[in-house]
Length: 306
Image (tube, rainbow, N blue to C red):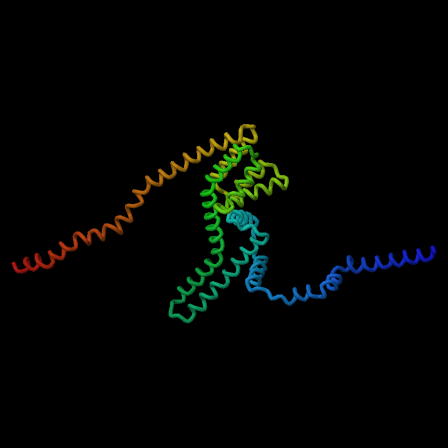
């Protein structure tokens, strides 16, 4: 009887070791056995979309472009402010610069080689196409960053009012930031994304002061930096957050009203040139035109007869 038990134990041990080798030491073979080889076959036979292939090409080109540390820091900050925060966004940017910096001059050269343009003009066109292709992605990122900053500034008053309501209703500052990010997701997605990032940083263990400072530096919006300064001072000196937010909201309302009044005061000066070059010529044509035609038809022949 003990011999049978020992044999059974040895058989179970050998079988467990065998299946362990198959299932854990060689997981690819186990996956092939379970899926019948369909997983790897599906991966190999799956066609790749052309946009993904172009994406990979641009990323590989970005690896070959020389990058200075100072330029990398500036462009990385600009990409973050534009809302482009992928892992390979900087490589894709430099790859796009290299790709269009080569493609545009080649296409321009193809079009101007057979034309009758002077050789100096052809060279200028090719150099202009090279500069456009190389610096065009930078300008695109800059414009996108400026547009996103304007959207954040446009949604900041609503976010501040909602934050005041949340804090005065009894929520803490962290919960108020999270609630504002949820409520403004559809109306103002840019500022909702930024507040959501602050909430993620707080959950990751960063101090509130550091997360708020990152918010101001990440966006580059002056009004949001002022709000961050108010929140940091309230947290540091122990003053009421609701009272500080309400005072800052009143200050922002007065500031926006003054900005609107300033724009209205500048409107008359800005309308001088459109009125002078667009409205006055047509007004002169309507009022002085018939009189001038009458003078040409009647007065000049009468004076010539005299």
